[in-house]
Amino acid sequence: MNGIVNSLGGTNTSVAPGTPRIVSSRFDEPQGHTLEGYRSTGSYRGYEGLRAVLDMGPDEAGEMVKEATLLGRGGAGFPAGVKWGFCPPGVWPRYIVVNGDESEPGTYKDRVLMERDPHQLIEGCLIAAYAIGAAQVFLYVRGEMAHAQERVAAALNEAYEANLVGRNILGTDFSVDIVLTWGAGAYIVGEETALIESLEGHRGMPRLKPPFFPAAKGLYMRPTVVNNVETLSNLPWMANHGVSEYRAIGTENSPGTRLIALSGHVNSPGVFEVPQGTTTFRDLFESPEFGGGIRDGHELKMFIPGGASAPWFFAEHVDLPLEAKVVGPEGSMLGSGAVVVMDETTDAVRACLRIVRFFARESCGKCTPCREGTTWEEQILTRLLEGHGRPGDLELLLDVADNISPGPYPVASDPQNSLEAVPYPPRQTTICPLGPSSVAPITSAIRRFRSEFTDKITRRPSIPVGSETPAPATAATAGEVGHG
Ligand SMILES: Cc1cc2nc3c(=O)[nH]c(=O)nc-3n(C[C@H](O)[C@H](O)[C@H](O)COP(=O)(O)O)c2cc1C
Ligand code: SF4
Image (cartoon, rainbow, N blue to C red; front, side):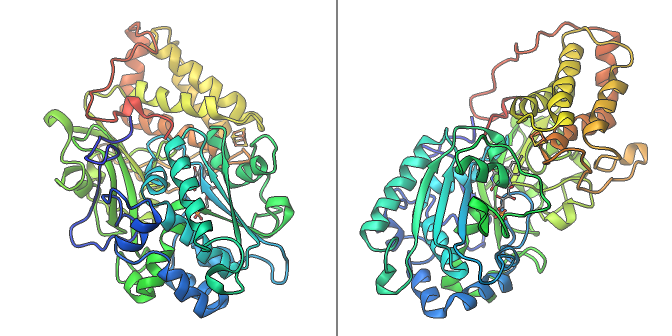
């Protein structure tokens, strides 16, 4: 389960006190997903930003996004305006691909954006399409998100009828179509080149980068900008309020807000909009607006600051701010904005297996270290938990991990043992970062909780894997970290 149920029958949502709601202002509006609701509620009037941008001209619109330093919210945090500028001049047609495939375990903020404010995303797509001169927008929504698909489809129909999408938008000579595509539910298709392959009708497997990056040769080998749902959803507010108001929120390096999907052992998991760089993990876990404290008065054991791919943090890291440029040197990443909390009742080896098993299942199999390595990692962890662990298993596990991502792998500092942090990102022998993602829980857990692993080898407890106790009804527990 992802998040608790609120009065609107969905995920619990909130915003930091005093923070302008940039992307979540209609989350609590029962009709916020309709065209009428988009125009009459929220922190700006729907489609007024598009009108303003159409008056500006495409170059000025692109400059606005560049000046704002809108960092991508899909994981890598690359500035959107800079990425748009990589499209080779004079090469047409160009495309925009919207990444709504969201499947990183713990991440569920794009789903909420698409369900509760689909017109905001559509307006964001239109602003981006105008700025780069895109001939067509392809909106790719994850297969299992039936409600999000319905909401986006209904909003698109309304927008077409109102002449907000299609030919001669709002009476101008700007024309663009938005095509909605449903994925088939593979995590790897969230990787931008795998997504492009899938859109082209092929099996979703990542392409080698370099030589070609999508901005130069993407969909059908044409210049293609791939952006995340949340990234584009920022544009209407920005077009209404201007760059200086946008940059006044957050920090110099990371302006604006971020949606954080909080799950695991907190009293109140949900999707929260926070200013970048000023909110700390402690605020997120403890404040009544957000997590409301660790469940049942338990102690924090560890937390994952940026989705299942991220190395783990521990109690001494809770006062770090939610800012990519701070979290990276400390040995982890903010990634897709998914924070997973695990209290002291969590078995580190079991938590590690749950995450590794996800990556093993989702490996596309294109490269050997990932295809074979993730399966080996899963097998070794499974036998440790089932009481069949062998002496040397930890060394074998780390050796397999090292074949996927040659060390030293990024890890958080460990002051008790005077160990320094190894900064993010990891190295890789693979085509894409999925393989190395499976290494994150292994190196994090072994470095910090080695005795939990060795105990399982020496005491040989027999814990059948798959017999986990169900999660409490109020929390998306770490053990229940699902597929988004
Ligand atoms: C294995 C893997 C899965 C990914 N899944 C997603 C995803 O579900 N959604 C997303 O927006 N980006 C995902 N990404 C990142 C995309 O490749 C790409 O960087 C992103 O969509 C670019 O958008 P942005 O610049 O707006 O962040 C994934 C990357 C990898 C390696
Ligand atoms: S790292 Fe894994 S998921 Fe990525 S291309 Fe290689 S086999 Fe596929």
